Amino acid sequence: MAEPILTADETEPISARLKRTRNNWNQKVATFFDRLAPEWDARMVIDEAKLNFILDAAGVKKEAVVLDVACGTGVLFPYYLRRSVAQVIGVDISAEMARIAAQKVDDPRVEVICGDIETIPVRRRCDCCVVYNAFPHFEDPLRLVARLVRWLKPGGRLTVAHGMSLEALRRHHTGGAAHVSRAMLSVEELAAVLAPWFTVDTKIADREKYIVSGICSLDK
Image 1 (spheres, rainbow, N blue to C red):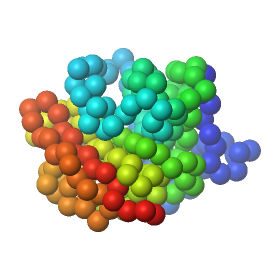
Image 2: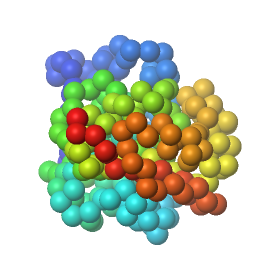
Image 3: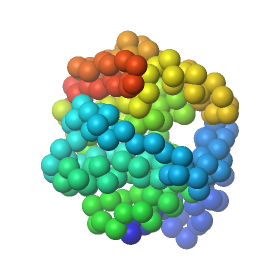
């Protein structure tokens, strides 16, 4: 199985480190998803055709190095591996989500990091960065995207995607997750957030999915 990578003092428990996250927002998000983690997979409904469409749009292919941001319990890991990627780096701020993700896959290509993607050190420049079903849970979209640029190779691709329509997504995050969610941006608004660093070539918002994807246009 993959083991979580401790990103600070490796002798210190993950739970203790997360208590020191840099703001109350991160603490709330970590606590919320820690609570949901044990039942997460049982509640998950996978539409493989839709998911494969999203991964095609994200440029996930053979020998790619993939950064899975807010990877949760590793739902996407098997789909990356089926595409013969070179490496998957999954990051999640929830210790319970990261623990389950690390236990799920017995493959040396998969690494799981428990931590805040906006502050952990960049381990490797990646070909693809995927933020799937998670973007509203980040406090500041512009700050997040600026950080993700540092993880990507020049010409690497960032993809923000959801397996539901924008309208359904907004309704979903006004329920029990309202206190750990920001209003989801339209595809045009998100494309504008990406524009300083990315050439956005995919904007899809239909009745069943949401995808914004672009190629990094900077040599960082």
